[in-house]
Length: 385
Image 1 (cartoon, one colour):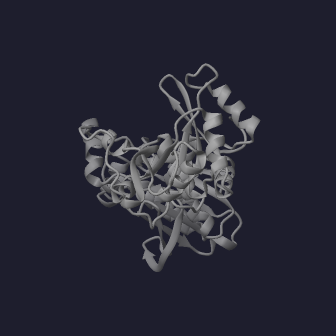
Image 2 (tube, one colour):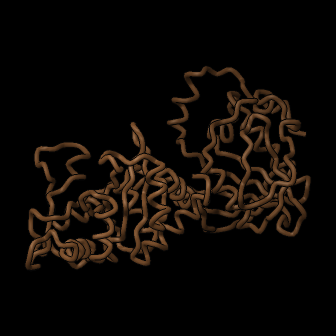
Image 3 (cartoon, one colour):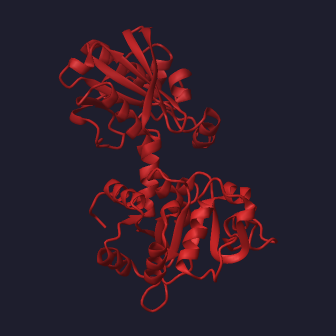
């Protein structure tokens, strides 16, 4: 599935759900692939229920946050179950007061819409019934990358109530459909196809987006900088140190620095992070215009100890700390927010090359040439030039 791009597939899927349509969610399993037809519970009609069960050939499930099912007093299907299965699988339900057999598509559609109605109460449902509720983990696919969580996430991304209808797709032989069969099914019926891994990546990317939350003047030994504060979807704070007027400069210097408590604050000789930070600030100050984006690490100082201490305390200035691509997305979102479009990126040879989609890197400028050994720098007997 090389085309369209993942974000285009997500956009096509959410648009279809908004219109009351169906999407196909594909998950990789240990022995192949699993496909689930998904629709928005609050927009479901009898025709959609009938189409899902005809195409998918499986029972109808409704995925909802577990807390919502608890509020409707829908108990676990197996009261003796423990662990995730207890919250996942619930007693089947029907709609109270709806006359006739519950197997009808119209009856199932009404039951599904009632489950997605925030005004519904426990008395609105009978047990057992023809609809099987599934409790979903808080955090969606970022917590559990499974079809029920994917259904709820997609419906929420479409701006609808977080309840999704699922019907598993069987192959022609009645077993799990192969990937080629799933893709052909989507093409034949005009159904948008979404891989769960695409949805996970999309949600992580959205959490990495930043918003500006304040600014201050920061005089540093290298010169005067303005500090712009940003917060991402994980609740972490990042800072952009801006010198001069980089937004009006042609391809200003930019450095992305990932927080390192021991190197930045304590001058650890284990790494060259503190030296790189000071060198980058000096290079930007000398250039007249530029930005250093200081990205908060996902590791606390305590968790860093578990990674750093067992390796010993030999100096290894050339070793780069592991960097999440999401952190780099946040950093370049900040660069874009500051009005920069083309930049010269200060980078170290040990760092993994990264190509952002927010700005264009016209040149990668080596940073290491201006750095002495971290031990000399920490002792005050070496300086970046």
